[in-house]
Image (cartoon, rainbow over all chains, first blue to last red):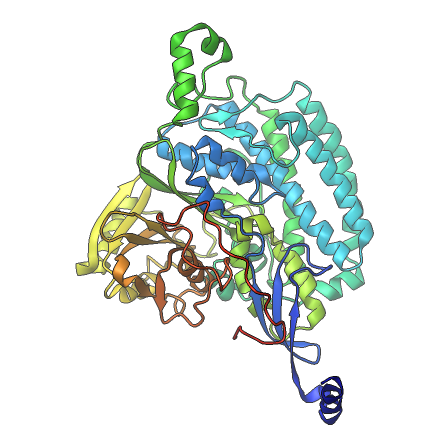
Length: 402
Length: 186
């Protein structure tokens, strides 16, 4: 059997042959479990079929089993590089169904923490992407920067990644008293690190050659593939949910939307890198104008009563019991709420039948659609180009596979 | 590399002023004609329910009609209204980058003939999302170039997001596949 195979190989001209290779599901250079079924002519990719789903945990099915509030921890586990944006997106959809409006301080807190999450997500994407191309220093620097922000997230929410910070009509707790000082310290350090990374990467010959002109996708294709976020903006379309369909008071902030020209990996890198600077701007504006007041609404239909009420009055106890056991009764209807996730438009389509449990909750995962376009981005490129192209899509398994 | 501080009109030209939702619904209803079953405007969102037969022509028109120009199929999913007729609803969310409008289109699909026409020829994003709906709901998309399961594995029995699929049901482990034999096609 073995000799037979060797003999037949000797007779064939290996360069004239189309080779089938399966790359993955566990490949050391892809951060994420994913399989590429490749048809190769030498090192050139003729066809690339992308197989996802290795991290599927039945997110949408499990959400239908519990109450609305019990769904919030599941949303942490979607895009775990930016869990707060998922929390905010889901809860905005539920609040739209309920028809409640949160206090201004709560809106500002949500905006600030969404932007902190956007930065951690971009740092993850760029740091890992650079490491995979050999720029390991940048990877370590960006991880260091990410730690600074996760310390802040931990001080606010009590957890680094599994935050579950939002609730219907508000957030779980107010900011810590030293929040502003923490942000100030972290941002000074962060800006210095970003400066270093800029010097190390942006005009780096090797990095530029590996990124520029690779993974091209035209503007028309990007729109047709449903790409959003940095992938779409790199192709020259200035679509940002925060500007086009403002939510949570984003229209009160002054920020710009970085746009690329060519739609290649280098543009995607620049868009993400510049977005970090814009997010810093938004957080600083929000801190400057942060209103005082409560961080959740006062509405017994949706918000748990204070512990003092629960232990000292029968109404408070009953209210608490009903909200925990039956769940908040979200009015029947259906809404689609989009937020600008770090990877693009993160949408929640939720259907309520008026009971305490979600009837259906669909997540529109931005990187799932990005992965759908990956086959076309890679066609005609070399096998080594898979790594930066895949890296710039920033597939997060939890969100893509749900 | 540029910066845009006014992303509300991304087309880079003279985007028409944002019409109120009522106007949008009127236009869409006129295009749908006899296909329209119902239209609603709820919580600032425009929805139209249309019949399955002939829906493809409607989708082509909202893609190309000037002033509507729904160039992005943002989301495609389904809902299982178990016990109701028709049992399934396929739900499409569209976005027009030129006018900044959103539109939800719903198509009812009966259980005994669970199929709709694929939209891959109009929007490429439909490819993976239709595969997902087939995977989770068992709704077939006629004319889809490659209707395989996407998040579940090929040996999986049933369609897990149907309401009559128990959430804690277990399925047996599958045999290891021969890595040389190609059971996928391009």
